[in-house]
Image (cartoon, rainbow, N blue to C red; front, side, top):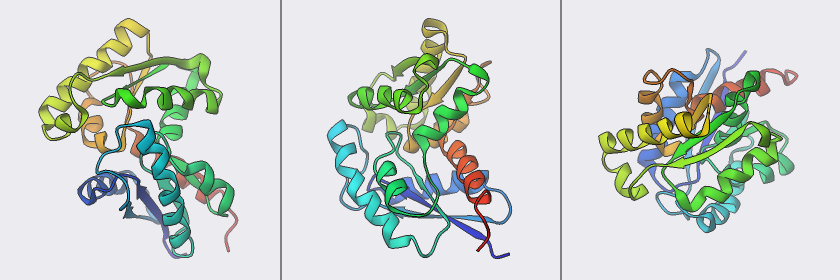
Length: 222
């Protein structure tokens, strides 16, 4: 059987971020699957507001439509899952978002989960995801790293330390039994923080890879 191809769509207009996320996704993929990336061009380099997240959705759907004949499934790699609902409605291919995938994983076994991230202006969008997934009773809340989101992204050590403090707050103050690092561009920091804490730290890109592989594998062969 030919390899199955998964398209990772970066709603942020940063090729470097796409390359980083694709590398993380490739490290999580199983034999028989390949990951390729596509980068938005109309969005900011880092989506940090609800308005920018909403405005990214049409382009994410456009990218999926343009690639629907050359891939077997899609990952929307921004934590608010912009355009995911539209892709699921319009296209006959499996699609997942890193937000939904990581929350579904975090809530496994009835766990209470929190989110640690850098973008306070997306707080309402993040809080809406558990409601849409039927996970409100599991959601412990979101904690935001101190500092400007874009400045943190330019300093990996500072980013990691600020996110670690947010994870600690999720656990100590909110009672989280698992914590998601909420953002595709935060993928490397998520991987670095996973061994640090006693509770599971969920990296959303590998969560999405595992979920899309399950969905593709469950489809009948052509």
